[in-house]
Length: 435
Ligand code: PLP
View 1 (cartoon, rainbow, N blue to C red):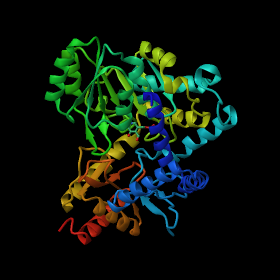
View 2: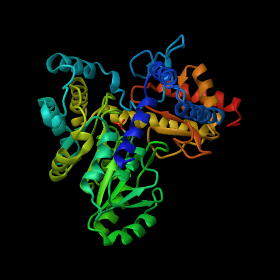
View 3: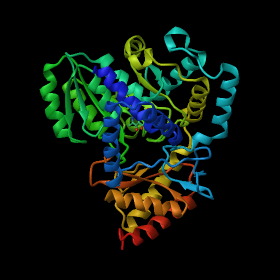
View 4: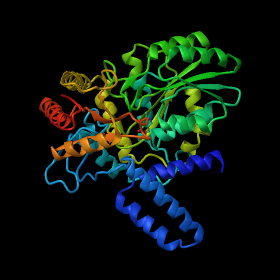
């Protein structure tokens, strides 16, 4: 199987996991009843065993079905009352912001439901160009290019930019989409230990034999909420003549004084060459991703990047929602300071209660528990108290490092924060996690 079709298989499986349960079940029933050959029976028996194994080890991913908009309070199927939501990447609470929704509705009327085309055939509207200019200006870069997702932006960057004469140096805990994107490229690959600058330096020394070097890292690692040491990375990049790429999905819009991201937080905005990020988290939460960087790189991506060239344009309402968010953030927004102070409140209260919270001062607050079944049953108990949080376990996090990831949003009230802490204390005591 070619690298590209392998990648497609991964994407299909990944997308399948995100589809509504009923749809997947219907497809599965169709597959199992229509394919009765010996080979398919054999594969399905094997899959049954695999699935039983996932269930038995407490690693099954349950998808709760939301019946409302994404917000700090949501309706959840089979729950009578509304639930306090602490597990969305809706950092600034803009997914249900009236001005953002209105912008989406207006674009639907004016520009239609979609483009039925890729960008270079007849899928570029004025609003796509405008959003790309907003993104470039927000990050202080020359240009930007939109993708259907940040997964696609990561899948399309490395293969386009790097050849077999180059090297890429990647943090071992980078997001799956960076790892997959790097797999697709022909450059020599170095994996440095997580956040380990001494190891990165050793690998940069070895990589001097290549034409170009690119250091690739998440700005913020979503499973632990830890921030990459970007200043040190940029210093090493200067010393060893390398480019710096950051994935800012968990930083754009709210990290740093004006929400520009990790580079602003750590004072290296002029040192980072390439930024990929998502429109599907803090920036309104609809969908879409982008690369921002030098004009030549963006021009090359427009001409060669496969997920850009061979995939449909972002739909107008999605573009308009994101554009409205950039309008709100461009000159600074009180939401940025708001989420930072609420994050501090949650982290300090939970630590005082005896919980271990991983990461630094980031709204991703992983409550470390270790055991997968413990994380699953505590999150069930929290749901009974009206709190929606998710237990993360292998393979999303390493074996034995299960946790409940709490995510703070600017749309939570101070009372919401205190309520979730109180609920954790009750449930944590019942499970003997804290005294
Ligand atoms: N990069 C990181 C660090 C992420 O957390 C995610 C989403 O989970 C992605 C990339 C993919 O973003 P998108 O949902 O826009 O494909």
